[in-house]
Length: 198
Image 1 (cartoon, rainbow, N blue to C red):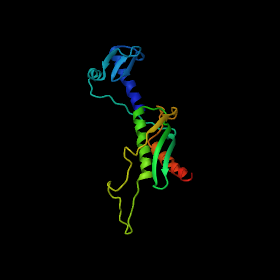
Image 2: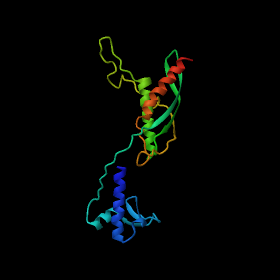
Image 3: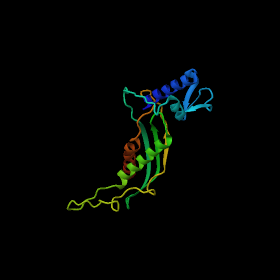
Image 4: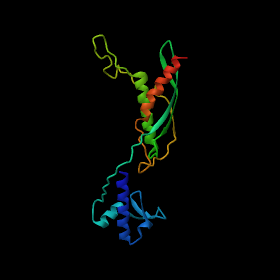
């Protein structure tokens, strides 16, 4: 997608430069419009009007790209809990994530993915259970019986981004979809094991 988008942008600028009789280096593509490269606010033509001038309804680009090597994101998690040994109740008092997903395109989406992954891990390690009776019947078959964390059980999560762009990808990104969940299970269970040994 990155390569195809770059090819498409280059093609649009090339077509616009011919229409306006200008050097392509003097033009740029911003927010759906052709603009002057030196003065980004000076809009020359919108993409819809450009298509009309070209007497077409679409411009396309095709790209084939092979990445040299995939690169997954990485993260370190800290989970601090209080444990009541008599009641067996656990409360997460602090949760910190330090992550590296390379270049961040949309911080809100990245943070949301991390928050969701951590709560997923907290639920899987501390709340959820498939319970069966002596006859093998599932006792937690509905959400009335299957325990998942609520908003009250979900920890406040501090996130620190310490990523560096990955040179092996076109736009410096790394994968990060699982870093909230995979490290979260270990962090939560290690916190419980550490509290039990105190």
